[in-house]
Length: 226
Image (cartoon, rainbow, N blue to C red; front, side, top):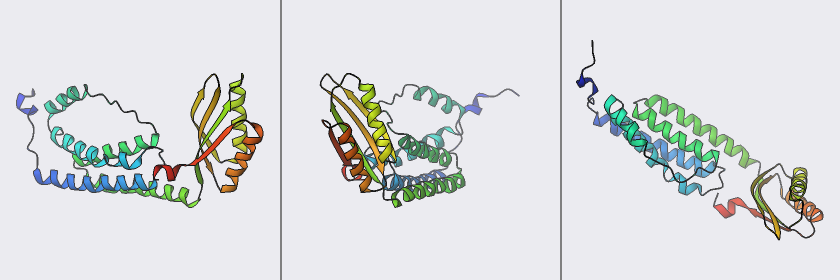
């Protein structure tokens, strides 16, 4: 039997179901925000990003609730969203993971899959809390390291020497930025050490390898409010 034009009309939206989904979405998004701020490891301003989690979640619930029962509205949504452009880049994978969690919460609740959202999101949060708590329990020193060395001809060899020194004294060292000018070569890292003695040992080793270098360690949690 051919599809009539009336099949494309929107089905009635239950106000009670919508309010219930929005309330549950608000609770879950606030839990996501708290977990991200408390246990997140991103170097960005976590509190600022976490404030938009409820907005993303509740907006997604509203969109899915409106279009889920109407093919015409669904097709219109595809066209409308095609003009949207995101100008702010996501700088760290953890930020993207939490944003996906917000969207997943909105999709599940917008589709009236409350059990999926009510069970899945708390399990994700529990895992994030446990892994964050374990890492904090190690009492690692999480630091920014900046090494500025008067410019030399072979910057590749200098960079390799810095990495070799750090590998002997720190648990991990992630390169965040490299700057090379006519007068100076700078390398910026985030490093993770298991105790303060390792920080001192790394600084002494760098000083021995590069006597003319300027070396700075900055504790990232104090500077970022983490």
